[in-house]
Picture 1: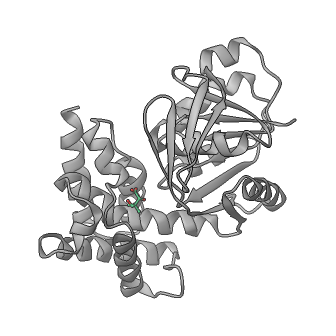
Picture 2: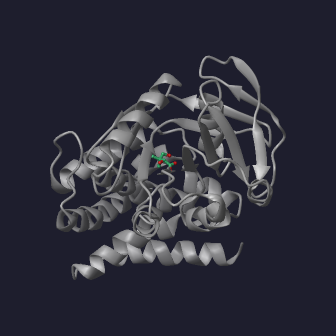
Length: 306
Ligand code: PAF
């Protein structure tokens, strides 16, 4: 049986582990070992108990294991490189990595630094943790897989096929770079505002916030136009991005966005992976991005208190 290591046992990591476990050997690797007995509550409300091989990175390295077929990195964006560094000594340099992070920070950095193939995945699967031993699959979403330089289409196809067998609806794509930016655009418009104001996504539609969403999207649209990234589904420019953002706000009106959850748990946010790349690109293209910089600074201030 091939082995998949899952580095970072958060909600998506554990959903992935439960999904893959009937098909491949799975090792879940974290900073601390989780209980072996893990419970998945499915979308249909069924409860599945599985005994997963869960271990710390130190233990994994000390065990000098057989090389895995894939290493999935499912940590938060800003933790991905450090997590990889913890286990890199036992990985053949040709090991394929799969990056599941939000934003556009870890993906280009690890793609440049890692000698083997690096796939990126973006998913709208919804999941949340209910403690050290439980994960709930909360929403069926789509998953897209590809690599930034389009050099590993075959590998992306085989991973997408395996993921689809496990119940993920996964597709290999040649435009993962655009898809990551498209998700980042939506995250930039929603996450900082809801995190700073402690509101659920749907509240952005009200008078107190809707104008602020529009000004964020204006800056994001100008930056992405320079980057050659267009909104999905044939949308155009600022109007297209705004339509997409309002659609996601509508679909997730009741959600506490991931950045709000981070702030509530006093965890560092993913501002560096979401706002950071936008601000960096704006500066490169000589575009103003005062609104994005302001949000980034406000979040930085909040994080100081953690
Ligand atoms: O980060 C999140 O929570 C989600 O990507 C989104 C789309 C903002 C919905 O909550």
